[in-house]
Image (cartoon, rainbow, N blue to C red):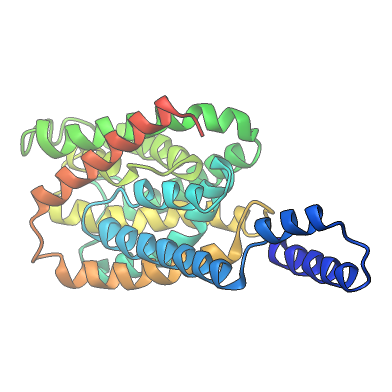
Length: 291
């Protein structure tokens, strides 16, 4: 729309120039402020590359350890979206990559003790839908004030689960009811924001007694499930920027496939350090300069 407007204005000014209707001073101002088509094309290519790379990185990161929304949220905001639109667009765009990661590890998916996987599945759908409804009914200004705190919370939880919690600590210390309640709250949070839900679910599932490998595979499926209900609500939302979502989603799918292939080849500790650094850097930036 902006490019079409610039083109139309340029045509009008050129016509007025030929007819002698445009003062020389005004003509010079217009010519100085007019953006060449080559510059617009360069900006378009840079924006395309930024979103595609963010999708690749987020898909790879989600498949390996989680925290991909830490990458996509600032990238979409830089592209010109509001915090609310960026979060909704990111949720829609990352969903295909989550499906890819979930399908690749489906053989390891498991329930938790007496809590079957079907129950976790249903809880995740309902909680994700509730979180999506909360997001759609939250004013953009309110969400902008909440973003720094949500990112800080997810980063702290991720850091604790990655570096401070000892292997096996608190394993088996919560029962099926507590595990169901935790998953429901995580699903609401996932449908509303989503940052850090991977490590939140890993912590809850392992504390309920699920082995780490099975917890990781189950987490990938449940993340896709809870986002599926939110995505279904977002599909008709005017906040979804479909061009950016398609580019980001394509990158997330490729990144998810690469993450599945490289799961046993990447230094997990280094990846977790990078995620925590990104999370804290984004948190500091959001507090210093609210979006």
